[in-house]
Image 1 (cartoon, one colour):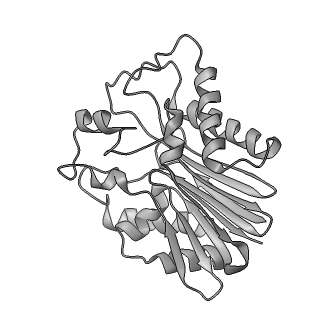
Image 2: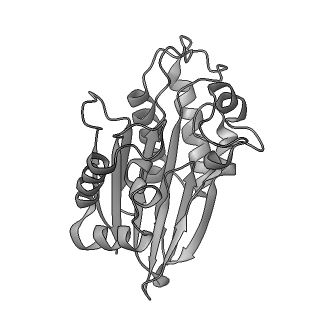
Length: 252
């Protein structure tokens, strides 16, 4: 696999809460959830700590473990990260730090993929068509946006709500996961919603997103999203004007 990636913090923010990690035949992209101001997460660690620990735990298992299914590996990585919290953190808190996950792995002649929450994977097929592997349950909570904090915390990692990587290993088995023959795919893009807002808010198509990643690299996507944010503003009224942005482009 050839993997090119780029990640950038939102302008004006001191820390990047996205995370990307790759190996010879796999790549994972994570997007940590920023807690609202004044919310006590019950955890002494910040979001960058969470995504680094979670990404590191997943990387270790992808690199050294048996060829288990991706949901099993993600569940194990969540358990490893829970253990790393230690006794100082209240892992029963409904506001515990959380993250999306997008994972792609080549396994012989097969391409395995997993998406948990809103960091999609876009597969470019050899004929030029694209397939979007996404998990949009966060966009379809009752009542529509803007969601109240009480609604989100009540439906996080619950049936009928949405699922993220946090302190519930079973969330891994609710991810959108599957496999496709490698021969039918010519490239794949993994991205956080700081990049996919180009499609979801700024008028791009998934085909254009993949074409730019393939021709100019993932860094160009970040440059394009920063320009769109400055020109058009936040993608919806309660959203941040700028967000952390990460993209990984994979070929073989």
